[in-house]
Length: 281
Length: 247
Image (cartoon, rainbow over all chains, first blue to last red; front, side, top):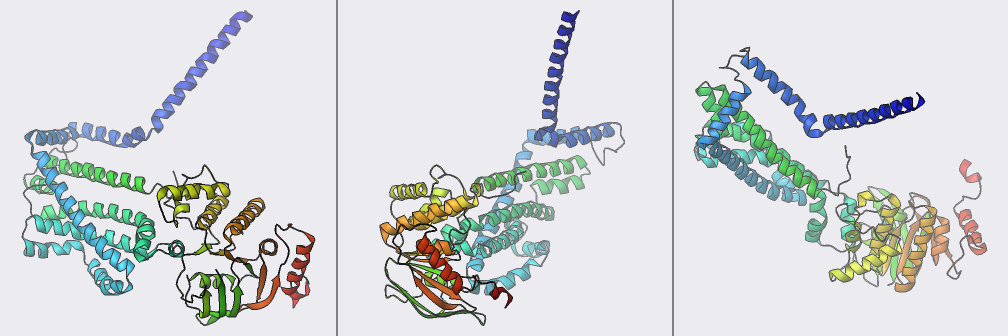
């Protein structure tokens, strides 16, 4: 009897251990970032699919997720998907580069030279208070509805956050670190390269990321105004042909490539700012 | 190098911090500036370094009276002031010139002296306050400056590290015979290190007394002689009698 009892408890203990292991595994699964992050979208998507199938949402207003997916796949097979994504990405990229280059040049001048600040900053600040979309008609008038007006438009959007962050980054460099450089006899250019630039890098990268975000916003505006290709054009097309699936497909594609581009910048940020002493969540 | 200050005054927005300060240091002398807080010790040091050139009067380093930073001057600040984007080793080599190998070799030598070998690749955020200050000290000493300016360099360190680094400073001084100006409010530290102690008092700060410490090095911390000096200095600063607190 006693022997049996012993066996029984050992079996129980074994089971308990297994249960614990399982529980641990389960909790691991539920806290894994990918799983936790996709939990809500999956639930919402399934709900949406079911409700659409039950025709709670009329299909001419809100088609089912599968229909939208199908639209994207069809576009992919036709080959138009790549052209649309390609042209939109090209516009954002070109505008982003243009806006950033101008912002870096002006921002560094304003940051480094007091007189440049007095010369440029009031005007730039005045221009900043103009809602950037107000430029659209003027740019179209000046440059037509071709690529140049769109890229300029996006560049204007990218310019301001990058410029502002560069200036505040440079002005915010710790005087104490600059003094260290001065003690070692660095001249102005060496000071800029060895101390001011690395110290203002975090702020610059913040500017780049918010600039890129605005770039994606402005490409939609630019393409809505008049384009024959691009994701923004798909939005107009969907509206005119009463096909919400095209509109939603375009929105989803915007979300995906916008996220990817931001992710790339974020990776660069983490790479180049690993020295920062910041809170790790 | 010799260092001469003649009638140096410094005024900040109408408030005079230091008035008519004159002193001259022989090459290889260690001078301590001692005084209570706010009497312009650090202001003087910044003027000597050339970081601040809005002073009146004349400061000459080896006869040169230009108000620019002389790159044979080293400065150890009160805070570490490490460049956070560079690892320890590159922080130490920051001010060194020449080819990379010798720079690294020298930096490693000094890091070992401050007890930080093996920490070369850490970033400043990974260091404790004391470690960071030791890196800063290594960074200043590695260039073997001919004039070394120290602004309460050891005030943030624990007692043991402090003594160890004071000895390191003396070692470096023995080898290179740098002229040293040490700002401190630690009387024991001044007595242990300095050939001459200048006591500053008042606002604006002015020279109150000068003590020449003739004691041979290595000195004995807390030795009889130094204790006598200490009591004398405390008297000068009115810190020995409680009367001064009430008046």
